[in-house]
Length: 563
Image 1: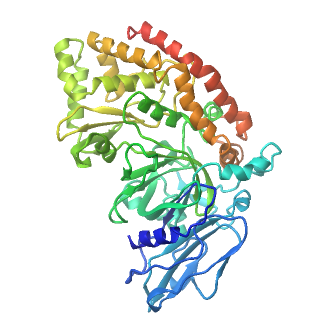
Image 2: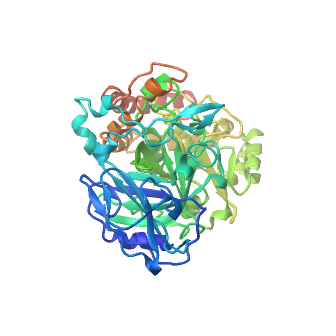
Image 3: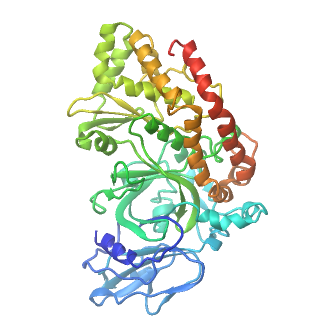
């Protein structure tokens, strides 16, 4: 909390930079304990800089001596420099400062991230580890460089610097050992899960016009399923959590806009996996455009239901550009409680087959009833208190529209219900990346027990459900419905236009990975770029998929007796 206050005071002096920036700063749990509340004051805030400058530190409180590091390490006296004069900053730098007296810390750590965009385009990670731990007994080769084939390309060269400032930016700064150390680093051990692999953090948000919106202490861990595996993706997702052990316990800020929930217990920084330039399958790499999952969640909201919101940012990790990321709400217990009332601990929540909160007693009861058959009215009525059938029908319609190819019992959906008072299960879109592929794709035949697809196959045998489904389909697929061609395309175009320039930075960072660093599974192994790959896929979706998909889906529903 003291660190939070100190950063907030400093932020009042923040310069007006053009980029919207979010800084996440991590430091280790170990080290000397603070014995005083006063914080150091630094002359320059975090942000983008184009010319060298010098950072001045106000007198250390309580007669302490200020110590600093320039590489993200915890500034303990035995491995830090004592401050005696203004610190020159000439390139991208992570500055960490704390003061000590008689070997004890007397001011909480202060961290600043100074980014020089021209240096970002030339980054090569020369001072960073050559490997990111091991996988299956083999060293994971690190990759840090921005590809000059992109940054110096005649078609892109003039756009590269504006591209870095075209989106919000997110910076994670860790003590190097917390990041890459073979035994404790979260990036060197991405498959490890749970609280033991969570690291304390500080989160700063700087708005588009350059002023600090907030600073809050938090924790960070690696997030996700398949893209934790280094062979599947070297670009991992993160989960930011807000707990009282770190600070106020919540992020209280309209991160995703003024409407909706403004208090957050956690935020997920999605890196993407399916249909991205890093996927193992050449066909999916060719479809990489980064918007699908956000479009799916936005579409469920447009259909009238609570849905996880998101935005796009550039991510920096210890001062290195890490790529295009998608911070989103996680539809866990705090999310559903925020929309439907009550306390998070009063909800049963599952992330596919993983029980996140509560238990699975009512879930098993729901699936048992469904598997026993609900074609008869009496059986259908028994199931109704356990499932919000209208909401579930809309969830199905959206996934059938996208022809979701990855939503079995183990992955890529959330479901939640209130235990107090007792309520029905509702489903939430999550990780909808295997969607919007072929115009004539039909995913209705897929069936897997303990999943939404099994519920669909049992429910569609009931005449009342077929009528309800048809009514909801007409609502969303005709008139001014959320899934009509114009509305579906407009929702997609909103995000595509926002990230179009930023995609250049993603291309420079990761577009060459499958060609030059790790050729995995299937080719072709290309340099993925905005003009040759991203724009053609966006054009296909806007000019072919969205104009034709609605009519195609209606035909599929008609053939199935659902329209």
